[in-house]
Every structure is written in structure tokens, then in C-alpha cells.
Length: 283
Image (cartoon, rainbow, N blue to C red; front, side, top):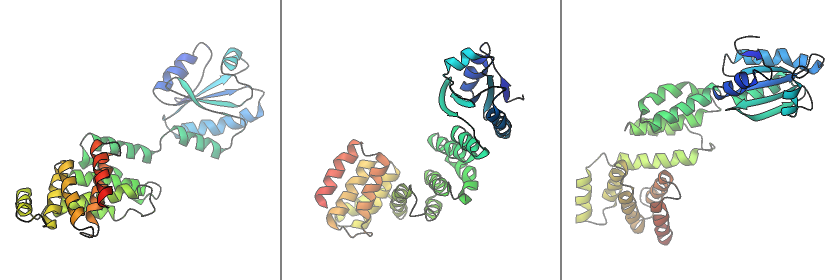
């Protein structure tokens, strides 16, 4: 037994398993002294749990000495593993297992360091602490499994910090085959819109539009200003006006910009539904 591995009985089960599982996952190993597969599994399981250094606990239950517990959890064959999280069983396995099977089990129940870093980055973005995200995820940029997701979160952080050039540069490294490519492309279009707004003020854009409603560059830049200010309806109005007048402007930019705003708002947003109908008419 060790700091993370212990034995339990019916009297200590509530404390050692149920209560502890509210702090971290707990694997309960139902075994018996006469069970050869149990003896083979034990050192592998214990070594794997030790290697996680407290991310998961292991509680061993001798079924010969604790038959009531074995009946309660319907143990019909051993070794039997039951994973407890927040006081309830979330996963179970029965029978002999090798090292690979044990590692797969632990990977499922314990978020990897990479997964935890991505979750932390999303939390920082939600709490408007975007400046901390690039350094947090820098190590994942070289990880093929999580690279694209990390790059997107870094780009989102740069965008929040108004570092448009860095955000656009980051997005160029995301693979077109990535599942999140559509989301990355939507962010890229929004950033291009906001970048266009850097050449003149919103007041200047609106003045130019009033003087010449066909001035598409000013409408495009005005949409960028409005998008930056989260005036989504205003941005959609300007982009819809561009779409009406010239579908080819900015390489179909108005349509792509409208879709990018839909992506930011979500499909169920009233603005999305209203302007999607309008866009379909124009197209």
C-alpha cells in the first residue's frame, strides 16, 4: 500500500472510495488471494497508478473478506475494476488486463496534461485573461494530436488582445484537414474585416458611404469597425449591402464575412436566422 493505494472494507468503503472519488477518480479493484489473474494484474495496475502521482487512487477489495460488497456491486468474475467519480461508478472492466489496457483505462478517466492545458486556455479566454494563453499552449504547437486546436486558441487570444497580425499568422499554420478548420476560417475572415478598419475611422467610413452608397471599400471597413465593437447587426447590414452590389468584392468577402458572424453568434441566434434568410434571397 502507498499514499495513493489502499485497502478497504465495508466499514471504510464510504470514506476511502465514495468520498475520495469526489476529489479524484478512484479505481476499485475487486480481487481474491486464490485468483491468478488478480495476482498478475495487481503489480501492473499499482505501478500505473503510482506513475500518475495522485491523479487517481486505487482501492483494493478482497472479495473473500467482503462478500457483502461483492454482492452489492454484482461482482460475478474477478479481477473486476470499477471506476468511481463523484461517488458513482462511471466505468467497469472485468478479467485479465495487460499494461496497454490499463494505460487506456487511465487515459480515459484522467485528462492528459495536454487536455488540461487546452481546458485551462478556454477558461482563461472566457475570463478575459487572453494574454496568458500563448505561453500556456506553446508546448502543444509541436504536438500533432493537439496542434490545430492549440493554434486556434492562441489565435483567438491574439484576436482578443487586438494583435490581428499575430492572430492571422497563427491561423495560417492550421491544417485544412483539421476538424476545426471551419471555425479557424471564420475567425480569419472576421480578422480580415477588422484589419480593413485600421485605415480609416468609422466616422470617415460612414461619411464616405453617405456621399456614395456604392463605395464598397468603406462599407467593408465600416463592417470591420462594427464587428470589433460587437455591433453584429450593423456589421451584417454593411456586408449585406456589399453582397447586394457585388458578390465578387474581396473574393466573395461579404458572403464569407456574413457566415463568419453567423459562426460567432451561433445558428440559433435571432440575428443569424433573420440575416440567413435575407442572404439566401440575395444569393
